[in-house]
Length: 324
Image 1 (cartoon, rainbow, N blue to C red):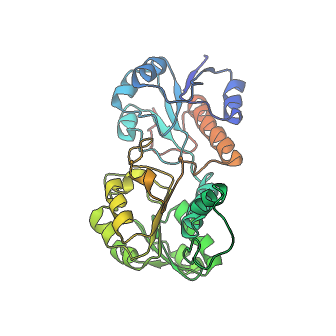
Image 2 (tube, rainbow, N blue to C red; image 1 turned 90 degrees about the horizontal axis):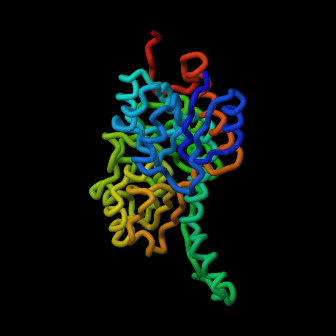
Image 3 (cartoon, rainbow, N blue to C red; image 1 turned 90 degrees about the vertical axis):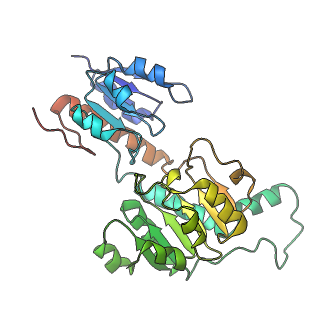
């Protein structure tokens, strides 16, 4: 049987080749934007598998038009774009790409942290504009990183990787997570604290929690106001974990000195005032954007599709389907 697979955006050839080697019939969206809902519904109708992106909302309405669907392989570690509960009810596996993007995303969080604290983007634009006339005592004064306090919200794989990197800067590491991480504490001297204490004490706060009903607007206006004066917020998790309008106010009026964002509440739309603030570094959701990482993500998504279609079970499942 020739299985039919929909790939909602062009992914690296490393994954596509694996599917081609199995003789699957592939439908690939080669356009540089997501499929609209009606097109997605039409293309998924006769598919046995789909490789989806975070920009694709795979909800009940989409799932219901694909009676043969067996696997939704998300080309991401997060999967808040998929109605996992309904997919499970329908007997459809949902998979993601864990572990492989841990280092790349942790590195990017640190790139943002350094860029904001050292005002790298502002200084680069200043030089390119021909304004640099020589060294000056108060030119682009930033903030120290070494010896400061880093607060990590969400101590999963990526959050812990960010914490390990902080040891080289001799930072105090605080974290708040759904559960204690004794090994993380033992190896890195990390301290588990309440969310309120973390926000009050941290010079840098880095977000690494998943987006759920509980974490949506986790950093709302009152919590942003409670942050340490002069602190910097880094978000490489999900945009909606932060109330973006409240973030703008905290950046303009205090207490925040700056922010580094790779994700946005209404992505790809960005709050217009964020675009005007010089104390914010904005990136286009590139946390996993390295050649090595994206290639392995493509292979991992493809392997999950193959595993479900050939053996009836996902390799990296986020749900569990009972065997028939």
